[in-house]
Amino acid sequence: MISMKTLPEMEISDELDKQITESIKATDLCNADVVRQALRIGLPQFLARFRPPPLWLEERIRESFAEPAEPVTPAQFERSMKAIADGL
Image 1 (cartoon, one colour):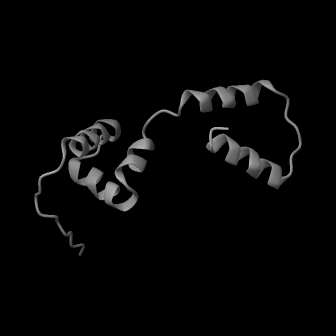
Image 2 (cartoon, one colour):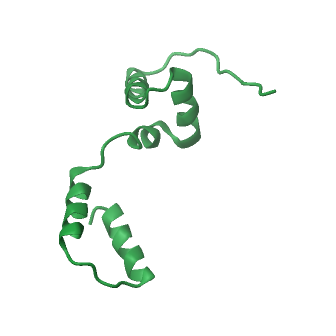
């Protein structure tokens, strides 16, 4: 048997309410599931999982497909992925 703890109802800021509403729309989850996930990983990170990637990342991916493949070492690959993730 799983027992669920509930938080007491409390007032939240308009900004937080807006973020929760956006998360509900983006994920099709109920309010309780959004709040549960947000408590685990943080609301901005949770919502970011459902947003499209930034345009610069899409452009970098398209560029990589246009170029011929080159052999790389695991260390080179790791540096390249870090640079992409950092937006460099």
